Length: 249
Image (cartoon, rainbow, N blue to C red; front, side, top):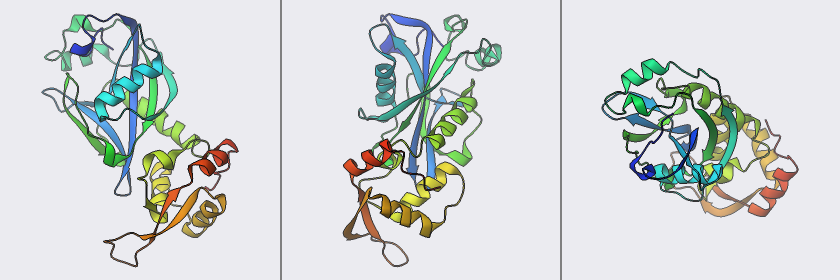
């Protein structure tokens, strides 16, 4: 959107009019979470994003932006769409709302954005705002505020891509902690899909796939009978994904 979005980019040669926007998914308290930025001195929210330098690939730029916002450098990410409409949003209105933060002269006349979605372990993320924002905060997917730019469309397409790729990408391996219960895993998929799953059928298919290993440990501090903990068999998980074998919904 801008010729430069942070002090870090000053003096660096950028690819003109090409930016990226990142949808960062986490899972916590049975809810799918999205990491959002609140612009300085406003109640306006948007997805994290940034510029792309001449000396880095698109993926390298996305990894850099994601590390700046999360503190994590090993992140699962997928490029899911390119947003290239001539008029992507009401530019005049946006410039007026953010005039106290950004000189209107710094806005690109037109910007094309590469969309990425990332999957992270919620507990490992340390949200960090950028130079233009006051907050970097997790939001429940079902409580997302109105977003600036065309970021609601970007979020919608990212979620659609995530749902389409459930059977082919290591979703659980990246959203769940190292040890988890079967209900934890099922609720993660329910949060992504936005619908309920038959628990007996789900557990049967997951166990038959061989992608998880049952541990001798149980989850402590729960009101009912303590459920057993599981962890992923990474090698088997990769094999099943290559076969497109997680068709359980």
